[in-house]
Length: 181
Image 1 (cartoon, rainbow, N blue to C red):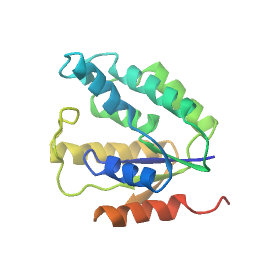
Image 2: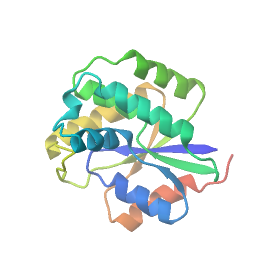
Image 3: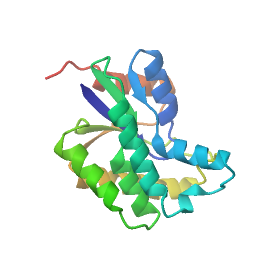
Image 4: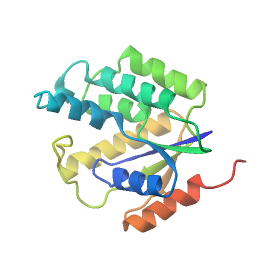
């Protein structure tokens, strides 16, 4: 099983790419942080990312989703990974919790994800949502932190440049459809 991470700038179109990949028959796993935020907001909590337990909740859901992902095909594509959560902790100025450190050690030791990470570049803007309250300038800072985190853990970034959705999906597909080597 080859597991690829799709990551990059907030608001860059990762979810749209992921949905297109699913329509093309690829097995995909949705982003955990957005789910944690949506669940908390549905319960009336406006900014769950300010809660001390937020990073741990994201790590826990990421691990559950990774371990629970069905292995029916030869390729899975994950919208973000624990390395993204490491970048998020750094961006928020939070210490990296033990659970996150342990999860990153697990995914690197067990080689859970491919070393090539699909890094989706920004589109020149960042549209705010209830779960994504970040300006475009802040998203660029977050993008750099993401790059640094992935490189620090030994991953290779494969750029998915700005462009129309079909071209981006084709760029991702060309990487993930390569036969096992």
